[in-house]
Image 1 (cartoon, rainbow, N blue to C red):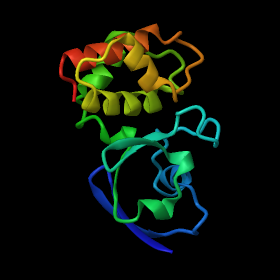
Image 2 (cartoon, rainbow, N blue to C red):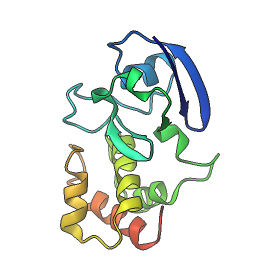
Image 3 (cartoon, helix red, strand yellow):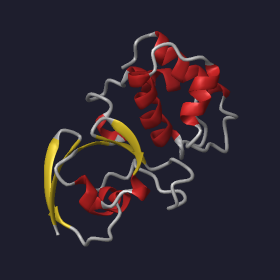
Length: 154
């Protein structure tokens, strides 16, 4: 099937088999390896990207479902060498250790920053619930998201 979509601001036109996952297309065909795949079942959130401005787990989306849509991956978040405010909050709060979950966490945090006005810790934790981290204990991640929301990091 022929598909066409925008990835990080660039138009992409390619052929895909109907059963190819968006995560596979991003990583293997487009070389966007910041989209990590940890479980292939939608449980871990490491593959989170934005589809038309909302966070989705790309291992749960068929590439053909992205036809005509806008995709943002972690590679498209920073502007050149300038980190996005959410990325800076993660850096400043040391909200990463091994880094495997970080791209998915940042993409989910971007969604939260854009859609929650004044969330409390419980709302942030609920928003991050679909993303697993084995290293940080979540405290610095929650603090980074709270900082980004407070500082208008959208």
